[in-house]
Length: 222
Image (spheres, rainbow, N blue to C red):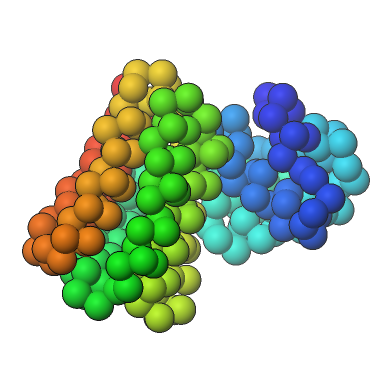
């Protein structure tokens, strides 16, 4: 099951409940926790090598995000995401992120944008290495840090929530087929366009990137 990787994701540097929630999200996205399957807190706790309490608390956090649902006396079922859900999440992200990218292209400090270059490279490198947990973490940091330059905390929070709900589960097969690298490289292209001050092209790149991400969702079981 997911035990092979879960224990490695827990360190002493963060609150245990938060770390477990992060590790569970990563396992779900990587396809180690399967949609529609019920998992018990004690079983997952055994994989982590910890007590069941922080696992149960973390699963309740994920339930609040819509990632799992409680099943009485059994545990938590991983929620399934429909194609309609994915279309709607993508539409919402586009409505928020595309115009924000255009605005930031005109207003953001160029040094702050260039600071995202190493993160963009980390996304590409992790896609090439098939390191999905690192890929997803770097991708999240890139997009949310970029949006944070707008100064709108609620915007960042909303997009962060949409990203969690529209998680990319089953990425292992996609990475093995080389489908993640092209999407990863678009982060460099976006930065280049923003740094050049070409707002319409940057908006088009962001819209295309979201479309490619949606295509990856459609390919996840192919």
